[in-house]
Image (tube, rainbow, N blue to C red):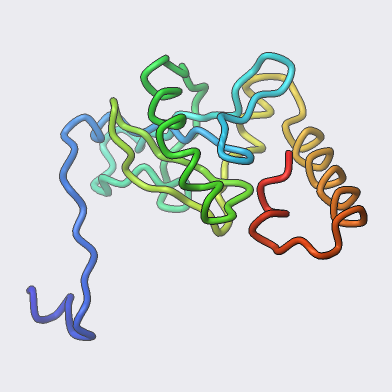
Length: 154
């Protein structure tokens, strides 16, 4: 099995988190900070369907999104990785948290924001677009700045 999964010389190994059987919470970060709008956190809890043989909490694998309960521990986890995301020029990310552990950081196209809007009754998309507009305005004033700097402008 090891030879089959590491054919190209690489494989990704992820620690087994027993509590992941209950799903994970995707907490969205904007500019390295927990994404809030009008006092609501952009987050969803993802859980697999009861009786599903697939243990993943991915929505594309059949899991369902339910309202998240954002805890101080989750916010602390996000606060710990925020500086690194900013350093790497990551403007928007979805951090999948189980207990006090990060299971995954999604930076390409973290899904679930629409569900968070539905559950919280606020338009996180509006806040997201406003942040992009601020970036565009800042870019006009600082044409010499690099993309990494631009990526984390609030």
